Amino acid sequence: MHAGVVELELHIPLARSLKAKRAVLRPIVEGGRRRFGVAAAEVGKQDSWQASQVAFAAVAGEPGHVRDVLDAVERFVWSFPEVEVVSTCRHWLGDE
Image (cartoon, rainbow, N blue to C red; front, side, top):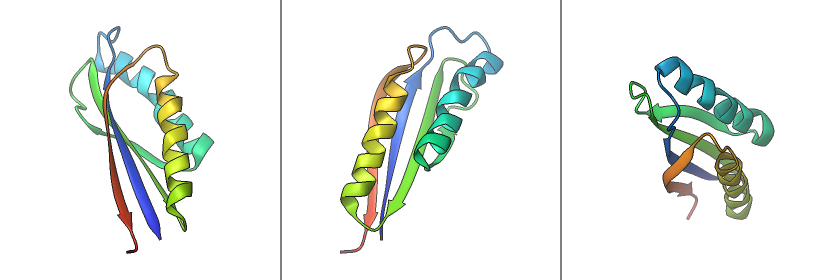
């Protein structure tokens, strides 16, 4: 079993309220879940209007498949013009 998580720190420059921020994040988080079959959530900066941390997790039998899924999710997030990706970080858990 291999598991990976990609965390993305996002800047949402046009958000002027938490409601506006969540309206931008909802299609990213729910779209990632639906399109790629990953677990997804906003994991940090929930009280900030223009900043967010989101994470996506994938599990598979092969590390290459996890890497491919997380790469696709990352490209998906980058495709949203409403957000700027400030940083990304990956965490891995796998059988040795």
